[in-house]
Amino acid sequence: MNKVLFFISFLLLIGCRNTKNSLESKGEDSSVKSFTDFKIEDSKFIDMNSLFEPFDFELSVFSKAKYEFLKPLIMNNDIPTLQKNISKGILSYKDLTIFYLYRIKNYDRMNEKSLNSVISLNPEIIKQAIEKDKNRPKDLSNYSIYGMPILLKDNINSKGLITTAGAVALMDNITDDSFLVAQLKASGALILGKTNLSEWAYFFCGNCPSGYSAVGGQTFNPYGRKTIDTGGSSSGSAVAVTANFCAAAVGSETSGSILSPSSQNACVGLKPTIGAVSRCGIVPISSTLDTAGPITRYVIDNILLFNSMIGKDNYDSKSKTISKINIMNLSKGSIIGKRVGVVKEFLNDSLYDSAVQLLKKEGAVIISVEPKEVDLPNFLKLLNLDMKVDLPNYLKLYANNKLPFDSVKSIVDFNKNDSLNRAPYGQKLFEGIIADETTDFQSKKIKSKLKTNGRAFFDSLINNNQLDVFLSINNYHAGYAAVAEYPALTVPMGLSINGEPRGLTFISKSFKENDLYFFGYNFENFFKKRPVPKNYN
Image: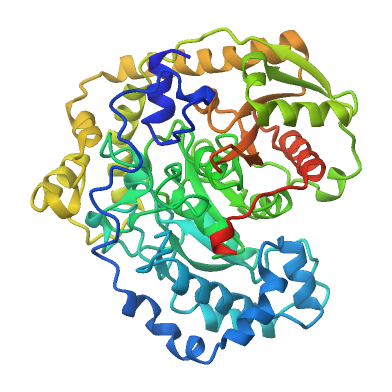
């Protein structure tokens, strides 16, 4: 892969640095800062007392004995199991919520195990959980997110919570619900709070560690605190899921920002087709490429969250009506005879090779391919041009109308007034947006060329080899999937020699989420070895 594509994969929104001998390490851009070069670790803006004050009483009477009793009922279980335990009367939505709050308080901030994954908590969450217990339908399916405490990446608007995108400039950004959150609430989900992220979804500083924001501090990976990269930019969402701080979480991706942290934290992450999930009310980078998506421990949870997120939004120009995934069909089908495209070079990676052999053993037809290098010219310009327009649109239409900002430049100027606290790693990419003078005519040509090249990369492989799915590692092909606007699903496939999680990533054409879930669900069932972080279990 050429240096331009690695710049896209490593610097823009992804932040995934793998082991020295991994395939992704070749050609890494030298300007990317080492994950362990931390200028700041803890947040200077989160007041722990204020964060947990609404829950002081409930947590004070929540005994260690109660916690230990609940652990096997909650820890590392999927949503259907949680619902089953609640239907049996041995667990409640209130218990589930307080359990997560207890873990967040004990593991997430200001101690030797702190992960810094959560930025804010919903002060009404316990009251809302009690209401869910009172009103739980008698015939509620176990395949429901009703009453499930969900964490949102802190670039997603949610009423009653501040949406900061990790930036000090947005610390007064109290908003209404985004379309996505309204959909989740309509399905009965509880919004537990917000997660940390790479500030402005990693399109801000340029050479800062992934998982850092001025508001949230530095997020750490529970599989190797301070030694293994969290991935970016949805770092807090993935870390919170794997650390059992929530039932599931929502992230967002422009190019790799769901796939990377999901892979790095042994989570299941879906980057949907552009248009499957509304983007309105989400702090943007690019209206061309942005999408939100679910991050979960298991494929079944990912499907449940995805089904609750989708819906036609008339205010999103790319939004489409799509069908929900039929969960019952996942176990009925078989991968026998399904044609799976595997990258020949990747077979040198032992985890990838083992995963491929497992699929082959279960009946898949393995097709070895050697993808031709395809350029993605002016990718950075696309992001510059979109954000120059899309961020002001967000500030005008979806942000708090009392914020004193109307452009990227107004935020850059604000940060300069206190750069040590607001932008300790600088704001190189924001300054690049301001400096970019590409015309609208050039912009259209850039977007068209990128989409054509991205689709050509996958379509030539899929069509020529009659593939049902293309198989990658982590976020390696995230840049191509981004510009093609194709969906991708990553599923845990084990730990590398140094204990770093790796993801097996399934990619297909537009609105083929059902196919991706089919392969992911079956692989997960064959694999049966999702690793858990031992220091947080």
